[in-house]
Length: 311
Image 1 (tube, rainbow, N blue to C red):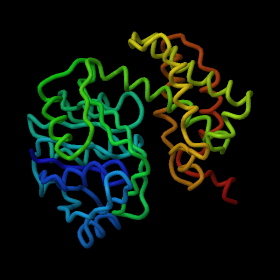
Image 2 (cartoon, one colour):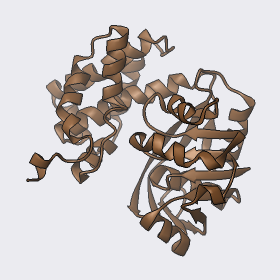
Image 3 (cartoon, rainbow, N blue to C red):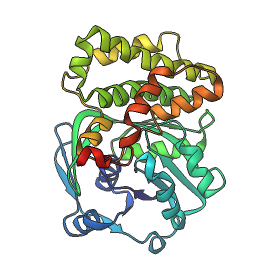
Image 4 (cartoon, helix red, strand yellow):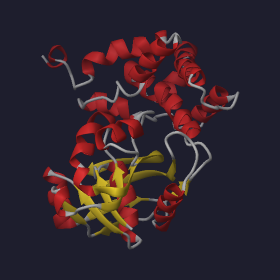
C-alpha cells in the first residue's frame, strides 16, 4: 500500500514514522523548515515506549509529483483541513482512502465536501505527542492507537485494510461497529480539557482541586453529551461518569493542546470544539451556555493573540 502523510507534525509524524520503520511506502507532504529537515535529517521519534529512532523519509512539497496513492493520512489541525485537503487532491484517485485524524466531529464530511465522493474514513487518534523541533517528535505516553471506521457508522473492507496497514507499523488500530461512539466520547472529553483549561489558563490539577471549577468542567461536558444524545449517538448511560473518572487519573500538570496553543500565541481549534457544540446545540434546541461562555471568552484569540493582548 502506498501512503501519503499530509501534515508532518506530532500526529502525522509519529504515525508516519512508525509506518516507514515497518517498511511501508510512505511519502510526507511538507513545506518550509519541516521539509528541509525531513530531506536532510529524516524523521526522528523520541519515545520511552517505542524507543528512540530516526528514519530516512521521502518528502516533497509537490503532491502532483507523487500521484495517486492508496491511503492519505491527514494530520493537520482542524482550521487547516480544507486547505490541506485541496492540496492533497493530486494524491487522490478513484479508490484512494483518506483517513482523518483531526479533533472534532465533522472532519470526514468536510473532506468529502472538498474531494467529492466518499473517500474519507473517520479516524480517532489516541496519542500524547508533541514536536521538540521540526522533524523531531516527542512521544509522551504509551498511548499509540487509532480507532477508525465509516463516517456514518459500521465497518467495511477498506477500513479493515487500513487498520491492517497501521498495525504493521505497531499502531494499535481498531475498527469498532460504530466509530461515532468513540469519536464523540473523545470529543466530549476535549470540550472540557481543551475549553476549560484554555479559558482558565490552568493545568488539570487545579481544576480538579476547586469544587467550583470542577462543577464548571462537568457542566461543559454534560452539555456536549446532551448534544450527542440529541443526534442519536449511542453513548453508554454512564458516559460522563466514566470520563470524569478518567480525568481523575491524568497527571496534575496535564495541559490541553488548546491551552498550549493559546500560551504560544498560535491559532486555536476553538470553532471545531466548543464552537461546534454551541452551533449544534442551537440547531437541535439543546442549551449550551457554558460552552458558549468558553467560546465567547476565547473567540478573539482564534487567529492568535489580538492586537490589544500584544500591545
